[in-house]
Image (cartoon, rainbow, N blue to C red; front, side):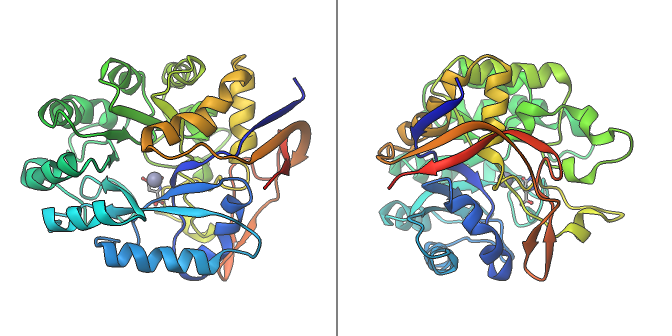
Amino acid sequence: MDELTIPRPDDWHLHLRDGEALRSVVGHTAAVFGRAIVMPNLRPPVETVAQAEAYRARILEALPPGHAFEPLMTLYLTPRSSPEEIARAARSPHVHAVKLYPAGATTNADAGVADLGAIAPVLEAMQEHDLPLLVHGESIDPAVDVFDREAVFIERELGPLVERFVGLRVVFEHITTAEAVAFVRAAPPRVAATVTPQHLLLDRNALFEGGIRPHHYCLPVLKRRRHREALCEAVASGSPKFFLGTDSAPHERSTKLSACGCAGIFSAPVALPLYAEAFESIGALDRLEGFASRHGPAFYRLPVAEDTITLRRESWTVPQSYPFGEGTVVAMRADRPIAWRVVSTTE
Ligand code: DOR
Ligand code: ZN
C-alpha cells in the first residue's frame, strides 16, 4: 500500500498556546486535522466557560485563511472548580471535556488538583451532565520514581476514581505504559485513551542517544521498549478505546535547550506521517483509519468527517525548525526523513 485515503482525522489532545505562539502553530494542525481537543493549560489556566469561549475566538482568529478547523474546548480543573461551572460547560456547544492535571505534574499544572477527594462534587456534576474527564495520569508523590508515576497513579487514583464514578466517561491521556494499556482494556467502554506518536515510535533510549536529547523530553516521559511495544499492540488491535492524540506541545527552542528544559514534543506538522510510519512498522496500516478518524468521534459522540485526506509513501526531510513567535520551535524528527507525506485533502 503506497497511498492511503481516510476520513479527515482529528487530534484529541493538542496544545495550541496563545498569542503569537498560537498564530505560529495553529495552521500546522488545521492543515491536516478537522478538529482538535484543545488543552487548557495556559497561564492563567482556562477555568471557566467564558475563558474557553474567549480562547476559542482567539484560535479561530489566528487560523490562516482557508481552513475549516474546529477547536473543541476544555476546562482546567482546579480546587476552585464548581458544579455550577460544569453545568454551564455542559450547556456550551463549544466545551467538550474537562482536564485534570494533578498539581505540578507537568507544564503549567501548578493550578491543578492535589487531592482528588476534594473535587468529588465536581466529578459528580460531570457524571450527571455526561461531560468527559481527561486525565493527565501521573502520581505527584515526590517519592515515586519518574518512570513509575503512571503505574502508581492508576493504582492509587485512577482505578478508584473509575470505580467510584460509575457513569463518568474518562480519557486517560497520552498513555505510556503496559499497565495503562491493561487498565484501559479491562475498564468499561466509557474509559478510553489517547496515544502520541512519540510513545509509539520512541523508547527512553531516545533521550540519551549519543548525548542528552532535550527535544525528546516530554511528560509522561518516554518509557522502556516493552511499554512502547504494548502501546503498539493496543493500537494495532483496532480497539475503539484507543485513539489519536498528538500531545503536540511546542516550546521555544531556547527553553528546551536549557539547564532546566521544558517538557513537550512539538509534532503538529509531522504527526500524521509519523503515525503512518508507526502503524506500518507493526503491520497495521489498515488500523490507522479507525485510530485517527473514527474511534475519537465515536467516544466524543461527534460525526466522522465527511471529507478525506490522502497519505502517500514518499520520503521528505523535516525542516530543522519552524517559526514560533519571535523564535523557533524544533519538531519531532527535525532534519531527518519521514517515509510518509500528506498529499491531498478534500473539502
Ligand atoms: O510534555 C508535556 N508538555 N506534557 C504535558 O503534559 C504538558 C505539555 C505542555 O503543555 O508543554
Ligand atoms: Zn498534553
